[in-house]
Amino acid sequence: MRYCPNCRRFNPGHPMICHFCGRTWYVRLCPRGHENPPNAQYCGACGSVDLSTPAGRRPIFIIAFKVCLWLILILFVFGFIIGFLNFLNSPKPAAFYSFIISMTLLFIVLWFSISVLPGTARRIVGKVGRTTNRFVFMIVGRIFRGLWELMK
Image (cartoon, rainbow, N blue to C red; front, side):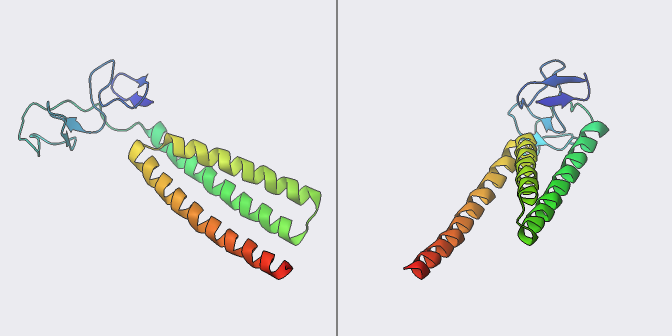
């Protein structure tokens, strides 16, 4: 969903042009669809002078929302680490429950923050996540294989 700062309406999906006022988001498009900076006078790819009108600057509340979202994510990661360390120091049921709750909240916030990202950033995060998962599962597999060999 995109917010248009010109007409102050939300557009469903990720359209290139606002459905209501016809302006573009933070770029100028030529008739062939080439993206140009918001202050461009000519298209850098084809030289066209017929460029779209950008909707304007990003609203401050969207920037503040993204900053707050990242701060919340950092706080949840910090809480996750503290909960995990408390669980390691005292394996009581209360420490285990706080660890599970903080881990659940971390994944919820992480999922939400990834779903807000643009498509390109989401694909990059997905590739990094898949690579990290392979590495983690490889390490865990080696640990379990070593434990299995010790138990024989």
